[in-house]
Image 1 (cartoon, helix red, strand yellow):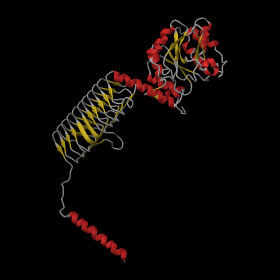
Image 2 (spheres, rainbow, N blue to C red):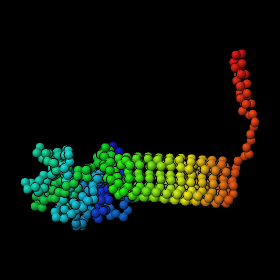
Image 3 (spheres, helix red, strand yellow):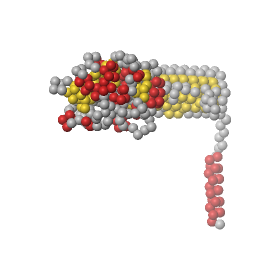
Length: 457
């Protein structure tokens, strides 16, 4: 990956690569789950323990990378005394389907070792599955060790194994390094099973499922596959994706039927989108909860916020973290909120900043209003009651309260509390000077003429 970050921590559709096989293991009820770590071991451990605090995780270190069999052998001590089946997964194979792993586990009940196989269009680089004359799996040969005839075989090793624990750890002692790479190959388990009269079973899956990620090109490809799967699932569940090729929706996102997602939308983390909601072109929703029948117009950004049913947002609005909008709230173009609660029916339709504020029901916030919430040291709150009218170009200097039913005139700077039902004004009386423009023009012209005469002299 040409990066300081461990490969298995690179995100793919919102999750690090290594999280996906761990999730599969949890879903299958694996206990314990042993993670063999090497480069960046502390970072990997920290990520997984934080993401799966209740999982039966154990970590072991592979100090030298001596092959796949060596990696599994490193887990021997962590599985001391364990009796049962051992499922071997890879931290950089994110496309496995749980249904395929269930098939593998079921097939493994009748044999010491079962594995996933595939038939890729181009088998270059993969180990080939070699069968005997009766069609029984005899061994797996890596490409560098294969003969010309073996290289023509189409069935390839998928690399995922389900083994009897006793067989696995006995067989690992017999695996050597007599191969082109001088490594301990896990694939030798298959030949050992055949030699002992209990041949392995192969469960065929698509090549896509067992594809690994080795660079950023393959990472981007895997992400496209996962996006396609997610988008197809959403459409089949009753969600309209106007252009599924441009909808970027992460795996943990939940969207209810009859929602409409327009092109170039990105929805991430644990976001929830309610029934009948429309998310407009180019909008970004990060880890937020959006109610039912909400209209989010184009180019809005919503971060770690909540939006109530039948609200209207945008276009070009930004909801920063901890914004909580009630039912039927209206947020218009170029309005920004942060750590602000707006009660039912409140509205701010134009060019407004509401930070660290509480806005009551049915209150109207005029264009150009701002809450002055930072005094250079602390963030301070503004509280506006219900049925309040805030005129355009108002500054609310926190901490300040505006009571229920109050009016604040346009252009007012509110520095002290406004009682309920009161009118607040801070404007100076208007002064009109008749003929001022003509006198100014004459004065400017006279000065220009004098300047020209001075240059000639």
